[in-house]
Structures are given as structure tokens and as C-alpha cells.
Amino acid sequence: QQPVQSPQAVILREGEDAVINCSSSKALYSVHWYRQKHGEAPVFLMILLKGGEQKGHDKISASFNEKKQQSSLYLTASQLSYSGTYFCGTEGPNTGGFKTIFGAGTRLFVKA
Amino acid sequence: NAGVTQTPKFRILKIGQSMTLQCTQDMNHNYMYWYRQDPGMGLKLIYYSVGAGITDKGEVPNGYNVSRSTTEDFPLRLELAAPSQTSVYFCASSYRAEGLSGNTIYFGEGSWLTVV
Image (cartoon, rainbow over all chains, first blue to last red):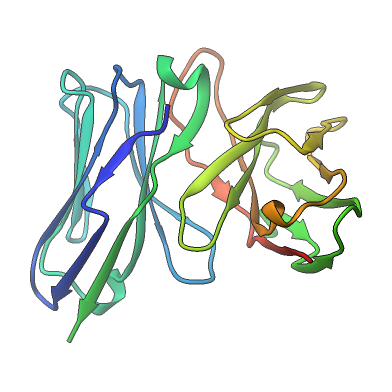
């Protein structure tokens, strides 16, 4: 079953923060986050494997609340380069084993 | 570093024609995947493979076939192309150790397919 992402789209000014959420109807084994620029392939950002885990690099971080079956991606002090579509990918019993199913994506546009 | 290589990059097919999208990876990954992405939409899993000789259906397998005769190659066959198969196709691969979940997926550059 496809994870649900929210919001569908976000428009930010440089320097503003954003949160993208990813939720599942069942417990998850892991959550991946990817960013895709227009016309390009998705690029890996990070993966979270354990409930309560938090990760981050630069000003992009994520958390994984296993009990709530959701993950959030945090973008702080956004830069123009953050623009793109963000996808969460999930693995869990709802995906029938170790295959990654992606959400519909959140389109982020950062303007100067 | 070649990574995941897909061919062709662009193709126009007529309704009813068949074709094969080629995919090869040089990272010795055991898992390989085919996703499709319709314009402005997310990634849908078509088929995946956990190793040579083993394939399984994803979310949208109808109209497609795959095979995995070697670790490196995972071709996707479209039979009797239909306009609904107009999409961008991404091949991807990852390494997953036995019994563990979670692994980085590496994507190819994509193949743009139009069926007219």
C-alpha cells in the first residue's frame, strides 16, 4: 500500500523552513527519502531503520516515529537548490516484503 | 563509475508494437527494480528481483514482463504497447543483506517512452 505524503506542494522563500510528512496505514520496517529534480532520476537523501531514529546532514534531517507509522523530513533555512520533488519510500508488511514503495511526492519550490 | 545504465534514453512506439528496455548495473547488487513515473506523478513499482532467476510483481505489472538471467542485467519487456504505457521508466538497484531491511536504491537516468 502506497504511503501518504503531505503536503502535496510547498512554496518557500529562501531561508524558510519546511516539513514533509510520510505516513503508512501499517507499521514500517524502514523509510527512505529521495529528492528528484525535474528531468532527472531520484537521488538518495537518507534512510531510517529504527523507531525513534533521527538523521540529518547539512540542514536536511528526518525522523522516524515507528509507533505512529510515519516519518517527517525537515528542511531548515531552505536554499534555492532544495527545489524539487521529495519522495518517501517505505518497506513493511504492507508492501509484501522487502520491496520499496514510494509515495506520490511533495513538490517543493524555493524562491529568492 | 557506471552505476545503473539504461537504454534507450528515448523511444517512440506505435500502438501494438513491442520493445525491450535494457538495464545493467555494475555494483554487484542483488536487488533490481523497474519503476514507472507518469508526468507529474510518483514512482510506481512494476517488477523487482531479489537475485538472478527470481522476479516478482510490483504495484503495476500488467503489460510488462521481466527476466533476470544474470546479476547485472534486468531487462523490461513491453508487449503490445498501449498509450497508457507512455511514461518515464527507471531501472534501479540496491544491495540488501540477508534478512535486513533498508538499503540505498540507486536509479538509472531513466528511459522516456511515448506510445502513439
